[in-house]
Each structure stands twice: as structure tokens, then as C-alpha cells.
Figure 1 (spheres, rainbow, N blue to C red):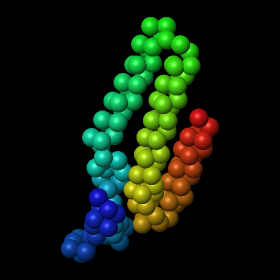
Figure 2 (figure 1 turned 120 degrees about the vertical axis):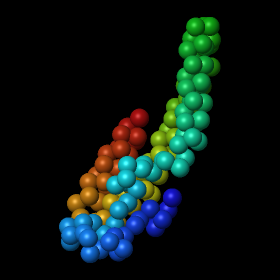
Figure 3 (figure 1 turned 30 degrees about the horizontal axis):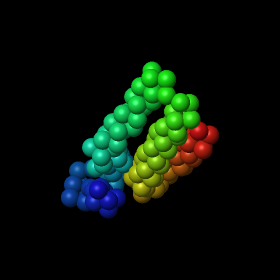
Figure 4 (figure 1 turned 45 degrees about the vertical axis):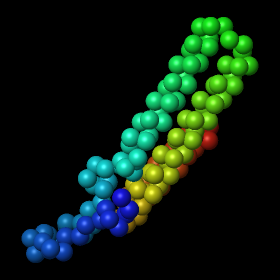
Length: 124
């Protein structure tokens, strides 16, 4: 769902709401996360990564050559990093964008949160 579709205004019931009622209600307010529409795709991808990790366990159990195991570790790591980047992009497009629409301190908090997540990804 694009941000414009996610927003609703209180114009219809404006007389029934006080001025403290926000004019914009976002998906984030409703508890819908940025990855919501791709949830099934994400779960499928995570199951594939889980299979790679199980494959690593089998390789160790079967005494496979170290370099072959390391190659599979690299592939699994790249798959997780790719998933993390996609999730981060969805977070920026959805949660951070919603906070930007609202303005105020929430945008600063979301940008700081995203910055810390990026820093964690870079340390891995």
C-alpha cells in the first residue's frame, strides 16, 4: 500500500473530533508494518535461508571440507544481508515516511532508529 492510500483524514467527522485528534491516520498507527504486503514472500525467503543453515549443519555432521562449508556460510550470510536490506528499504518507505507525514519528534526518532539499524548491519 502506498503512503497516499494508507492515509485517511478525519474530514467526514471533523465536528465530532477535538483539535487534538490527528488529521492523518497512517498504517503505522494501525499496527501495519512496511513488510505487510510482502509477508508471504519474506517467510518463503526466510525458510529458504533456514534450509541453507540446516545444510551447513549436515555438512559439518558429514565432515565436509572446510572451504566448502565456508562457501556455504558466505552464501547464507549474503542471503540474510539481502533480506535485511530489503526489510530496511521497506521500513524507510513505510515507517519513516509515515513519521515524516506526521512531522514533529517522531521523524527524528524514526531516522535515529533507522541509522542505528544501518550501523548494526554495517558491523556484521
